[in-house]
Image 1 (cartoon, rainbow, N blue to C red):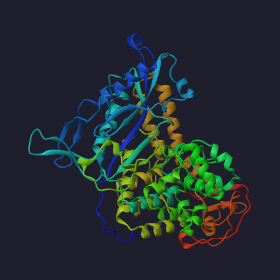
Image 2 (spheres, rainbow, N blue to C red):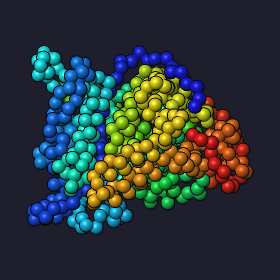
Image 3 (cartoon, helix red, strand yellow):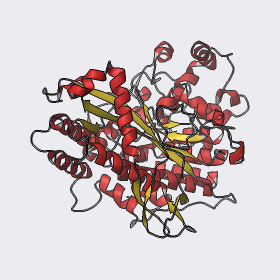
Image 4 (cartoon, helix red, strand yellow):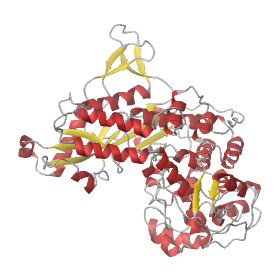
Length: 571
């Protein structure tokens, strides 16, 4: 772990009133009784029944603690009835369905053969909009009517997870015999961050994006294997025809196939696009969006800002930071998502330009006005998602209170530092080593001495919970299979191996030769395509000294032979 990077000068800007919400994706496996079979006509009926069971589980009062008076009280979660029309105003929790969720064929085969009639319901639980930096009032005290009980978003989210587990994964619950709540690779947990109804100042958005783009490797290190993806276009002799016919991830190949496409892939594909010419991009735009072709960012600024054109043709973090810096609007930044924003790790689709709008003037047609973070895998551990929200809250506070020049300088310094880790990033956001969030991620990264690996600890706890149902539990085989699969995906050594693979295939872009020499342990030298300034096979620009705005020094045509890899130093 490196030394902490100091924050830059604070901006004379009002603090953000951060708001947010989460989307919990999971699966409810139900074994139908004889009584059920009599009135369930089809899978759709079974799905509606499962949805209603989750809704009914969240309806009874939830025990929470007031953050001010410390009294324990009953709290009714604001909750939409699935049978009622949903106005999507996000003032209540919503139990809905997501048809993209399912068990695999292998996972379904793990369900005990005695339960031949079972159903898997794709459940998505969307939270209401919650205050992330303030306590919020939820109920009047019965013992003291002049006092209003308040809680934080943490208490509300913890209460929801606790109720779900007690309702479906506890041997004492009424559903113990016929229901289990599970997660697998098809599910994830999305987080939306906003600022009331107003969005964010453009500089704050640029700072958020700059930090996450520059530290994509460090952020990857705290996510599961199935959520780490990337583009290896630097190594490929790509063609425009192949690119334009690709769906989902606009990359010739990816590491692995990108469901959540990271911004490193967006920028690499943008570089490929601009090598091939804006006219080709316009033709693609016409085919995919049926809109009138026109120059869009960054091509719209090529004639006025040569540094933008140079940065747009390069594949390194310094150049990507320049493209973020030179954007004139949120819409400019959205252009990089190439129509696949909904499957991007950072989704800007819901965000419009910053405005100051009173709540009374808000309409649901204005949209969510949030940035959506889609990289976090599915979890039934409230601590995991709460700590990830803590990372994002710290990021937004830092991004809003620090000027862009200081943020960019910190990003460039950290980019060229192989020792910089996620723990250093937490320090940059103002967290201390004694904070719970710091210790959580130190545990995840295997940085706490004399500790069992985090993934093993969670696996053992989950397996013990399954054993509490007894030896004849028909759900045990599939539950244990899913638990072990999840442990594999979160195993820190597996995560490091995939990050190393992504790095060596160019997924994080190009780096200085000195950085590569320090970071990579190779038998026959550094792969040439990773060296800052190397021209990819599909490129047309001549290697030269990039401008200071493009990020870092060029090492010209320094190359190394592409040979067998021994490995990378630990991240």
